[in-house]
Length: 237
Length: 237
DNA sequence: CTCTGTGAATACTTTCACAGCG
DNA sequence: CGCTGTGAAAGTATTCACAGAG
Image (cartoon, rainbow over all chains, first blue to last red):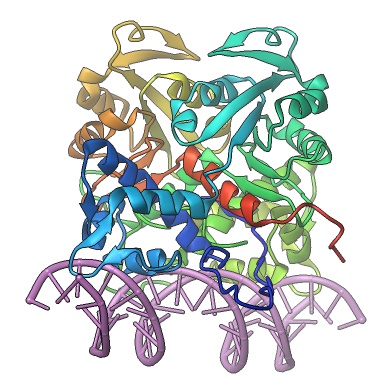
């Protein structure tokens, strides 16, 4: 895991009056990350036709403690039935709503190299409410190619493409050198939610939401732990 | 930087606190994640020929506070010069050593679909001390193909390939359905450091080090934050 | 004077313990 | 009883404030 920098957005002074909405309450970042796991597990249960689930079962399927599950769910309000558990379908909907997945998210992928193409064809996006609406690249050899059901656009037309497709999220699948420039253009074009796979630290204004995934970083973290454990079978100096 | 990306796990949970050398002190997980960022930044500086860097500069380049940088570096011991800063090359080496990157890491990628192939060709691994030694798949159409400088092996031979290549890390780039079975085989074959891109929760024994990257999860977290923000306006300083 | 290193304070997360609904 | 919901306690992480080396 890499790191996130979502500035503490938490000064939302409530509206005066009768609105102590559970809906609008800020959910701790750690809980948000886990809610996505619960959602995934719930949707599997839903597909299997399971109707109810306990915090213990859900916890087991997500590698979390059951207390943690209950605490996280309590941020959404109380929707379980004591002595019984949670209704799968209802809870799934409730989490989707809390995460903002009821609205349409249109994702443009910038960079049609190996990773960009892999992402464009990744079924997991479509399945979970994200619509990949554009794939862009700078390489003339790649522009115009069909990848999945998309045609690669010229990144020179970035602004036009983002506007036309009404993209509201961007995934940067670019080499380190190109990432900052493209990131700036994306933000300038009005997209403020960005997921970057580029192995560089991108500088973005306060209001922009940037998440980073760096695969080498993940391996390095694994290396740290592996190296600390005296492992049977592994040869080390 | 929120520590709330993907929930830190896989790491050995509460081991009995066997306090070792000052050198071998346990580094907090949040710090380990940031050390990889510092290392990346330092290696850029190194390539540029910069010799010294202050915690403030390093912090800026990594999106972290300078206090945080100094605290993290203090886990490795004190290597800065007061009034001056840190020596880039020395610090880079020191962090590499602490992260266990001085030994050779040989990575086998299981799954040669879009993502697996993208990863196999990802230069970022080689550049940062990880040697991709094998790429495996179950699909007869794919087995034998050349991807980068590798030939795709049959996943039926997983154990033999892992043994022959002496792989000590595995990346799972598989669909959800195949992941758990393959994960079990990998562990059985003696590899205990696994990075999974499969969108499922894998069950692994205590001693196994598992990290997960799920791209849809990342987008969902972005969606949560995006949905909470009012229209981008001029509410800055 | 500058910039590191670090105890102390604050903020955030997780776990515990148990009240209370069904 | 069983399982949820939640304050309070324990454990981590980050920031503050400042001592101290160069």
